[in-house]
Image 1 (cartoon, rainbow over the protein chains, first blue to last red):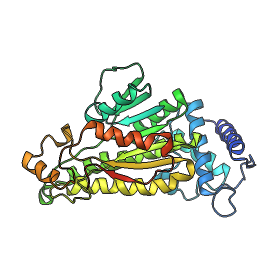
Image 2 (image 1 turned 45 degrees about the vertical axis):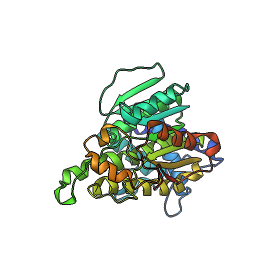
Image 3 (image 1 turned 180 degrees about the horizontal axis):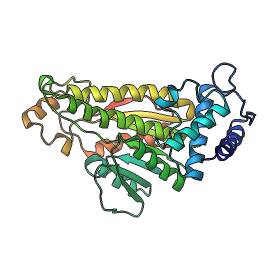
Image 4 (image 1 turned 180 degrees about the vertical axis):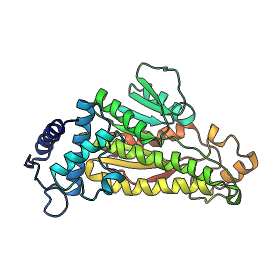
Length: 98
Length: 229
């Protein structure tokens, strides 16, 4: 799965997230999502993750769970930045272990 | 409304499916077994309620078709009566998987879908065996105690999302769940209720109707036992 395709879906999800929540989360790989310096509260992260999971399901026909034990055990949290999130999504889609 | 009922192939689940279909609602059901589709507004999915992938696929299909879910009724459940000393770990695992893991998975996935509309109703199933601490039902009652805690805490976590979470605790009702319980045991149990009789399917749907009606948007985190426990 090409990374740019996943970036497109994540950015589309951020557009939806920004619109629904009247936020202005920047669409950049370096945007810090969650944790130190993060732009999202936990409930906002959940909202964004749900949007991304649904868009991946709709566009790529992959029914994935981004939040999992695997996600929690990564040395770098998938939820740190948009880049780490996209890389993690590519990993779980490629491994097909969801 | 779009209503999802687990364990809908027989017993209380089947009754509830027919009850809400007769009111013009769209009902999605699931159970381990495959059943013939008996109504144009009913869709059945054979699955194990504790199978995360299968559960996610079911919710995916509901979302793609209707973009929403109004009500989840977590009815699927299994029981096993046995003295603790005679209870295999496998039995415990099976009961916890169906009664607790299944309820958890459906609550989680339903809330994701309901969150989008900022409204939703979740109804879980507990049992009078839990408050009565019935001998021989340690594992079953413990699994339902877990469901009760899940109900009360998820009610708090989901409240900001516009979702209510409540539970009903039926008395014994003539279904497959209690068919192997000796009649004498059953009478002893029923005698502990304020109203000493078995419940009916209608008693259950009456409580669920109350939980899911629009006016009940301020009712959440409640456990309602039938029969006066």
